[in-house]
Length: 240
Image (cartoon, rainbow, N blue to C red):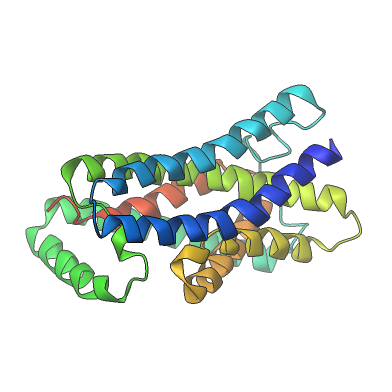
């Protein structure tokens, strides 16, 4: 089982940080001559996320690894592992952020004034995004982007929270849980090298926050929902 764990870890070290980075550079060069490549790139993103996820599921089916080990379960609150203060603070922040995302989604669809301001604010920030070329333009791209967001919400939580935290702790049992979470979060950050160094740091921090939340609640299922909502809010305005 250890060998299979290392296969996934090496995949996360090589595929997204290196292959994904150069793949994005190639995508941008080709996009300058052919706008149709964006849709194909979306399919490649989803494939690159589902392949390791399916591999993890096969590991679960064929070895002693269980769905519960990777957070695919309903669990009760655990305040002992990280301590009640950290656990409740992160849980509280996540709850606030969850309802904030719901507020954005609902208000966007019911308030024309809010929708207009939201789109204006989003458009003003587009020029600062290092990965703006990745965002959907055509109607088909915008519909496909929903599946990209859903894929990311499901697979990234299974890979970078559920599986990697368990695998690193299993392979290095003497490591502190804080170091284990940091290792998994750094790998999550490196998966976003195509977005530039600033976003690697940002996603590493987000990954660490999600890792603390995961250890506190013992399940990745609520985090999958939160992850999808964040990505969904990011696409609001694209349909206009």
